[in-house]
Amino acid sequence: MNSKLSVVVSNGPAANQVTLTVNSLLGKAYQVHAADVTGIHWSRIGDPVPGTGGQLPITINVSAGQTEFWVSVVDRDQDGDQLTDWEERAIKGFDPTNPDSFGTGQPGADLILAQDWAAGVTNQIVSVSTVSALGYEKEQTPAVIRISRTGSSARALPVILTYGGDPDGTKGSASTSDFVLKSMGGAPISGAVLIPAGSSSVEVLVAPVQDGAVEVPETLACGPLGSTQRTLVKIHDATNVPANDKLLVAQLAPMAGVTSEGSGIATIRLKGDNASALVNIRFYGLTSSQATAILTINSPLGTHLKSLPRGQAEDASWDIIAGQILTTDQAVLDKLLDAGIHLNIASITNPPERSVVPLCPSVDPRSW
Ligand SMILES: [Ca+2]
Ligand SMILES: [Ca+2]
Ligand SMILES: [Ca+2]
Image: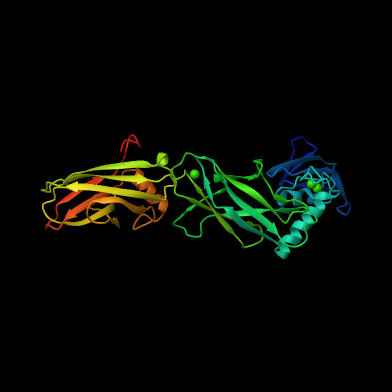
């Protein structure tokens, strides 16, 4: 946000009027002053005008000879709790129209809470830990984090959390649109989390938002604003139960122009969390020994993504992780579901006979 004040002055709209347009901020107010004809004596014109967060035109009536104006920025305290509107907007969870934003019932609540919050940040008394790390969109299972403080718990303490993604850029990261913070009772928390008076900690839910996207697990790093301490939770599409598997199938056949009697079938069962898959391969009829079984990218002879065990594979494990030109886990998942991952089985013949095919999503995930 650019908070540098700029004022553009124009004549009108009426003959005896001047309009001063300021780049206003929410929570601030703008007071116009004008000099008299001597240019020495200044006076306020009208009341301060509340900022809108955008260009704010203020029109004033001017007397003959008045040519000098200036605009000052004024703080307001609508609810009289001694915190300015600007401060209350800056500290998440505080309400500039309510002197007891968190409903604590304590006299002077907002001022004390804001002072305690600031002191808490300075003294680093708040930390965050994970109670339950795994959240699931489909099942609407929340992750759970605990926010703890040291020192006195005589008064309630607001805590503002800040969020980031996975420290490893190849992994999926959650953003603030992927979850809603909720109280243990299920009420959404839009601003600060309150550690209640008499408690040294509070637990809150990280409730996944079901976005319909097919995604690898997304990490959310969460910690108190003003601290580098973080705890990690993960948001998954769905749990790893058989009903959430996705089946991908390949009918193995000789590559065009290759002489081979080889044939077979390969399946990949992608688990509900999209983090791993089980590979099964049955093939027959190679005229010489098998040399390799390779998952390739984009085409049968494309970049090697992963070597699989030779022979008939039964539930061989494949972790969906970045490799080669697919630099994120999500890119591997997207490529797999876009039929862009191929299975290449080659024999030791020179040139090798190959059975190759893309792995295509099955129409009926339970048909296997
Ligand atoms: Ca206030
Ligand atoms: Ca307030
Ligand atoms: Ca998602």
